[in-house]
Image 1 (cartoon, rainbow over the protein chains, first blue to last red):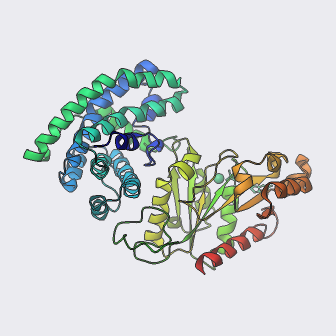
Image 2: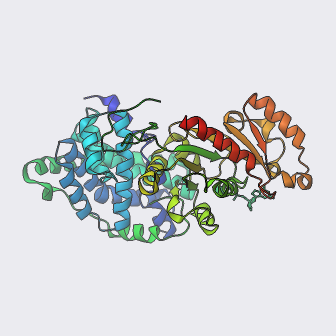
Image 3: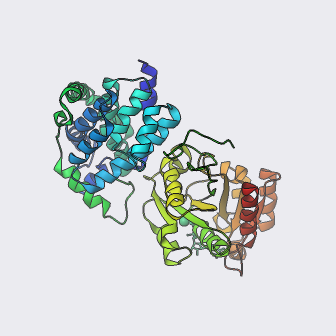
Length: 224
Length: 225
Ligand SMILES: Nc1nc2c(ncn2[C@@H]2O[C@H](COP(=O)(O)OP(=O)(O)O)[C@@H](O)[C@H]2O)c(=O)[nH]1
Ligand SMILES: [Mg+2]
């Protein structure tokens, strides 16, 4: 297992489309729910323990070799908002393109054949981690980190928030990220034995509702 | 350009010259340059000039609206299914240079859905003078500036002005009103670009896009050869 490969995959500049998405932060800023570093931290904590946890369990399961088609269906079932499903598949397709160029692998090619318009991003993330020689823990770490780093960097742009403060929010959440990764990997090991129903299904209704509202705006900075 | 045999079925991963089915993909030309210099107007004029002789489509990269795509739709320069808008997350240069995946998906979807296509024009959301297109996204790029943005822009240079395959200095009709010295702009551009071509145009003039359209035809001839 290569620690350096994990850094490549987790790098915010990995060219997989994430920069155009705010992880719900744009809707939350507009609604007045995120106004500064304090409320950004609350927002990120909520996302980490809901969408982040589910994404991490999906990614860890895919990294353990669980069938991506069943994981993708399970991701759909855990994503009520059609706008969020579209965004997740778009990001999955973009990640798949990048991963195939960076870590060519038969499993990634097969995934592209099964999902020409994209599978849910965390599922692709797990298969990409496998192709990079990484394991379920690494895949889960990428997923949880993305679940909070996306909104944090988007908020820097949306509110002109001090970038040091936004990064300090991420640092303060580090311990909680560790815990969520542990739970997600545990769930993923159960998925291997008992199927996708063992995946967590924690959700945050405001993220789902916000995504639907956001998708209908005529003017927005971020795609989701 | 190489023939890649590994893409049976799943879409290509990079700038391969062939599509997954082995056919040659469309030539992709990027149009970049500052906000308001006339990129969308040039795209519209090119569509009108070329649509009867070749199969083409457009990708726009708007910064925070679908305004460019909607302008092109309103002007009916192409059928609506040939115009796609990419959302760029407040960072237009990222989407055309550092992380091109959304744009690659847009061009590939256009080829799948309305193809076969010979030409795809990719308009960047307006940005500063440093924004250039990745070679993984486009085969050639046009940088559009205008006389009203200041006649010292060619002298200042920057990656767009210096390295674009074609530099267009637009809105020459406005030069007398804004006091821009076209001869000086031409000399500065020449100094920055050596043998690379420069076109001065006014889209207010009859057939104002002719020189750029001819350049695009030449690119296409070279690509198809
Ligand atoms: N006078 C004059 N106006 C032009 C010319 N080309 C474009 N424009 C106008 O300049 C404005 C900005 O053009 P647009 O194509 O939207 O710029 P973009 O932001 O680079 O896409 C519009 O109002 C155009 O009608 C030109 O050659 N002469
Ligand atoms: Mg424009």
